[in-house]
Length: 170
Image (cartoon, rainbow, N blue to C red; front, side):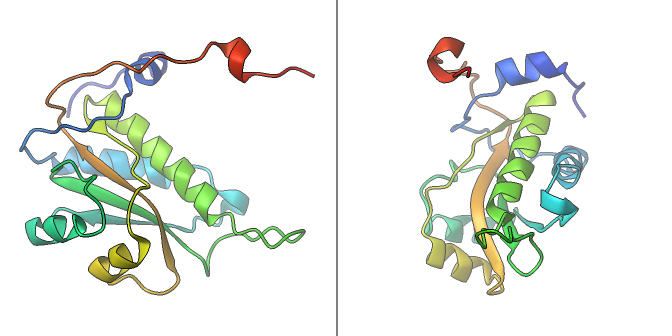
């Protein structure tokens, strides 16, 4: 596995990779990324995340029915939550599975960057087609897809707003 980067380097170098080589990532790299997701915090530690690893060529091709945004990656992680396992806020009935799944996905994207892999957060997909293609149980709610692989090219962050434009002190 590639050597790991320092955290400040990771957050500065992470970008939305939309162009991957045809090489498969190594199992050691995939397990490192999945472990980062497993260690992510979740509401009340319910750990409702469910991560579907898609590497089968036929299934990767079928995913394209749900979205054009797989970018031909050889590994796509589908991050879901189990609505029967997630914490539900009592004051308004809000399911926190979507928030938990997003935190898990963020941990996995940062882990991928730390070992020189590219990824992107994809939420533009047809929900019903994705559930059907993956034959997901009714209680699994897909939140995002993470195509992951070796980047064909490195692209830095787009222009970012200054802190003063996004932070409000009271």
